[in-house]
Length: 261
Image (tube, rainbow, N blue to C red; front, side):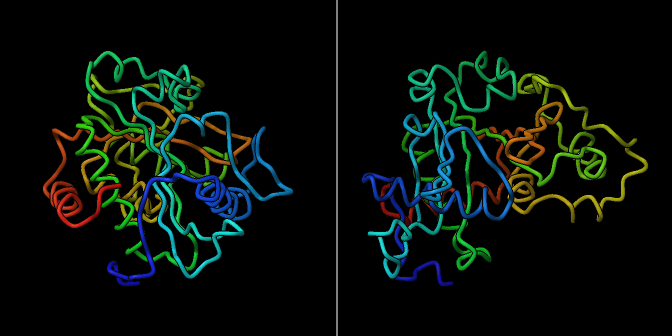
């Protein structure tokens, strides 16, 4: 897919059809593909949603060749919550899983990321780049300083994930001043550092998590087992002041080349 594909556009969801399209895509990915569920998931209408949705902005990638009337036009989505959104919701989504006290105490502008997914027909790199370019605009316009959010491994058996979880703990743990901690603590240091097969660990880490690591992301302490959603979650954190050169290039390019979200 060409990033300049004229059939693709990026915007914040503004209509009911946009929002339902985002929830339809999330249902396809998180429920149908990954086996998740939740209290507000609408299986009859095939919509994945929760109580936090009204307080998030929804950055969507739209394919105008798909039918908006049936809410199938959204082919990529990112859910974004600012400090103001969290104040209206009473908390960040991640606070059900992680103690975010270190981030809140930092006094810096926070942005929570979540529910990132791409339609199977648009996977392979370009769609995610477009979403990240839109995210770059959003971050720059709002002067966001710290990005964070839970990211998931499929499955709820920590033993089966011992290698990648241990790798993250030993090599990408957040500095103490940003080190959030899982509320229902599942240790990640399941293997000693010398027993980790780096290549095997990296192969077992989902692409989105690896992408954040390449850009300078770090993880909180401990995983969280989300049984209703059939995932093992880690909390990813990115300090924009410490982004690596590649991240800065993506953000600068996005700010120059994308229309305002």
